[in-house]
Image (cartoon, rainbow, N blue to C red; front, top):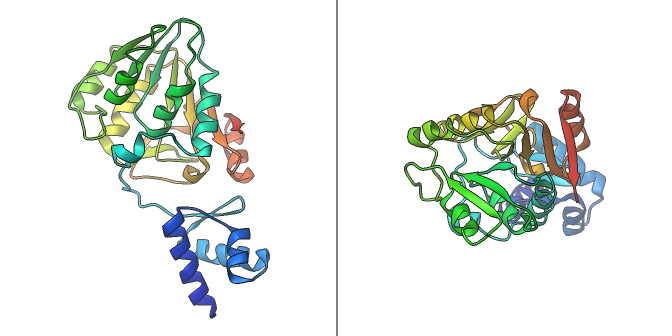
Length: 253
C-alpha cells in the first residue's frame, strides 16, 4: 500500500470512529507504532488531524455545531463520566451552582450530591426537568427563546443571567487554548461570559479532544478560570501550558 493511500485510510478510520489510537492503526496496517506516529505527525502538519496522547482526533471546523439532543443527552463517554464525577466533588452544602446545557453537564446530573441542600441555576430545560424531583436541590431556570437543544442563550436569557450570582460555575466549551475558552456561536459566548463574570469560582470541564482548539467565538480568558478538569488522554504539553498560566489542572480517571 502506498503511503498516501494509507493516510487516506487513516482519515477514513478517523471519520468513522471519531478517534484513533496509534497502536490500533499499526496493527491494522501491519506496521510499527513509530511508523504510524510519523504518519500522524505529518498529517497534523498538513492540517488533516490533531494528535493526542497515543493517537489522533479530527480537526473540527470553527463553526462546528452542537450535537442534536438525541446524542447530547445520553450517558456520556468514559472521559465525560470521569470529568463529571470529579466535578461534582466541588459542590458544597448550601452553595449556588451554575450547570449549563452541554453534553457533559447532562452527564453530571447522575453524580450530583443528594445528602445536602444546594441550589442550581441553569439555562437548560433538559437539566431543569431532570432536577425537578431532587428534593435537596432548589432549581432556577433562566428563561428566553428555547432552542432545539433545550437551551436558552438569547438576549433575554443574557439579561436574566445578570440577576444571579453563583458560588460555583461549571464551564463547558467547544475548545480551550492559550487564548481561553471558545464556542461556535456568538450569542452562546456572550451568555456564558455573563454567567462567568457573576461566578465566584469557575471550574472548566474540558475533554482531551477540545485542547488546543480555537472555535469561532471567544468565550473567556484562560487566566480567569480557577480550575480545569480534563481526562488522562490530554497531552502533557497541553497541561503544562495551562498550568504555566496559573491554572489548577486535575486529571480525572
